[in-house]
Length: 111
Image (cartoon, rainbow, N blue to C red; front, top):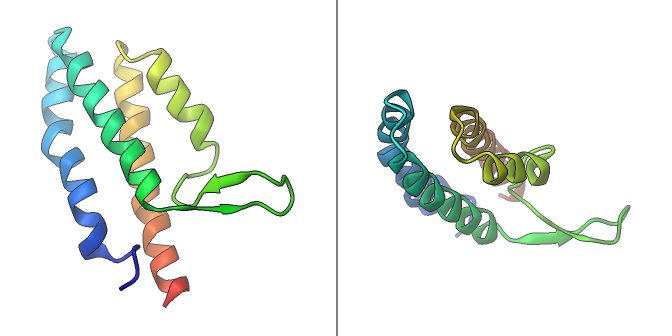
């Protein structure tokens, strides 16, 4: 079975869906507990990226995570560096959404 199938990836995205509204609510209250949930969401996102695997970029000669969106490394670093900011949540939400789209594209391509 293709590791980019919706069924195999769903648990990774479900973890985000379960906590994202809670995180947004905590940020709106300026509750520092949002950071704890964000830390876990970041770890879950990294697990998702690792699950997707990597391949060698022939141009750069470096291994790249297949599910990582454009500028994903820099954007994830922004989330980590500014985790107490609501903007970190917005960026992480965008990363999850873009990763989901990329996984769908890869699923179709790898069939």
